[in-house]
Length: 504
Image (cartoon, rainbow, N blue to C red):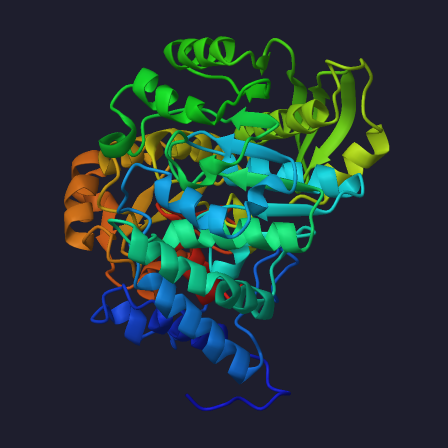
């Protein structure tokens, strides 16, 4: 790869090429991997301050980061699991149990985990606490997963952390029936980096489930459970009760549980678990919640009821009722961490809360990356997420005509996902991302035709072509028509679309 002169601006499409070239577990025959250099008319403005890091500018650092990514990719991926915390516990024991060096807020649920984690991080940082945040999956860069002081870990620090623990990883690999997985090694890296910083508090999102998730070697002072829906049913269970049973495994003795609105059957399972371990429960709609919300320019204006009282005039620069509920959950979690509602009854400083929420970002979640026509990205990937996205895009944008671009994973409820969007998509362009888990575009199109009808479905195997086609369809309405494009179906689809749209 030739080096670019230092004073040249990076081509976002070159960045897309480099990203997918580095993903060794993805299909090398995909046209989208070979064709990332195409310049889309959809090109947007300069990247915003969204916390998504670009590839390292230093070629040596970039090569070193790629080497680490390749080593991690050679392990079990995030979709291949052995339900046990034995390996991660063994590794952390050798490392001196870094996860015990700081208090933590642990987050599980089906939808809204990452957005809620980012809100919690913003609130804690606003109160001058040093934070560590661990979330997954990443939108564009693996370093997004580990944040220190509300910013992604630097590539240099990521590499250093990996190299520090690598000998111990090998030691555990040799002792266990299965090698540590990609996610287990990353989790250990996050916990080690948090201890080394050191942070005042860690905000940790589970990878999947709860009980046997690799993150569940921490004893979260606060356990947050965002809304539960059917997803990963082959691993977590086929009913809300079964899924709730797995996810309630993060509730530890004497912790505070912050419970988002849940299906009744799921809530009962979690409440039973809380009673068993003497945990305190704060329920959305009972102890806290959203008092009022109205659409505002660039987001929404909220009044939140926290554990200590009311917080009026909160501006949240994110779209959708689901994000308002995420904000209520995040606020209650931070209040619980500070002892509000149990040790004392008072609100946190309102100006600090307002300024923290006003600065929140959540890349790839109802994110606008272009205007005229407006292109929105949303990482919804299951029916519940799709319903929330459909409601949000309808409420916030009121498009006269909306074209969907969908690239989904083959292991998801694709029919249920598409049915959620059928009422609002005038047309849908089906495509695929570069993941080996991506659903074949023709198979996706067959389902889409059953849902939308053949006349409303277009197939474009390459993501860049799909974006171009959707924008062209939106532009047919005319410059001032109010037509838009929504790109959705997978975090990977959204991440690659961001790069193609110049946001990488």
